[in-house]
Length: 422
Image 1 (tube, helix red, strand yellow):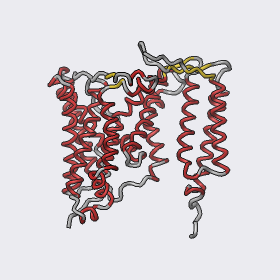
Image 2 (cartoon, rainbow, N blue to C red):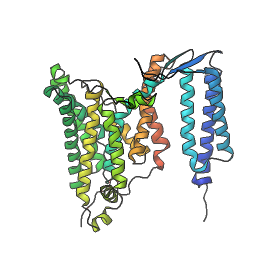
Image 3 (cartoon, rainbow, N blue to C red):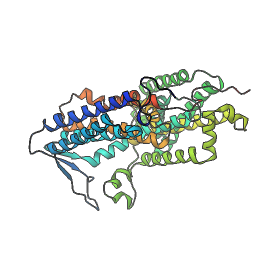
Image 4 (tube, helix red, strand yellow):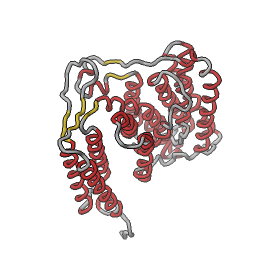
């Protein structure tokens, strides 16, 4: 078998990419050693709090590390990984090594940012999980749709509509659960609209999703300015309060992060597990994946292709609507125009980065949530970085993911392709 220039090298990874990754790791090592090590005064420590506020059953000592020494150690580890990558490479483990290296760089950066002081690391982990909630719901919506062969660009509009309807109905009914149901239902309606355009009339799915997204922006902005801003009683639904899970919430570090959250976090974790099991371990999931990969073959064995696509798109709309309701019923307690801030599009990137797998999408959403939480924490620490760059953090993370990893992901074979039943 002949191999052309730039073809696959060790472990199926191109030689050019191996060199590029090695040089990138070397630059990270230099930045950590010289920027965070030499750039820090001698004798400074960094303190990371590992306990929530208030009284706790099990108190964990704060983590205190010498700033400069930690930077040198982490820089040395990165330099070692860079050397191995440049000399012999990690093969198929290159992506894992790259992810670990980025994590080491972030740890070094946080240590440098907290030099001579500290911050509550546990609080940052809690905010990371909360920031990942709407992104995860958006990613799960995309997984449900695209596994059945329908591209859903309208996720951002579904999130925004769910946030608006959750606030309005929750305020009118004076019931948060009714508002949550309303957010889910408006998501279902938009999902049905996408299904009609993309499945029945075979409109280009990117265009159909964009139309629904623009419709959601226009309608929510108009109705908010016309009614909610003039009648504050229509825009005060309240918020779901955190629910403490007995015993589990007292587990050090993990307990306060995962088991002392509001209903949206628990619902998100349940849906990640349920959709993963449903897609890969049930007959329903097998049929959905068959429709997304080879609808003609699925049709020949009796699977109702169009019905399956309709059902999944509506289910995806419901999930996105619930994610949108999080903004108003689980976070700020009111609706503001364009408050979703592009989280639907970030959810699409998380879905692709997670390779159309619910658990992978959730992991990617945590990365974006961490970037969002990081910019807030750094602004509190008054790190000498312009605030404009800090606000760009989650979107820069999205661009890096799309540029570096998405081109190697393989979507379902029939994704975005209309099906005509013969």
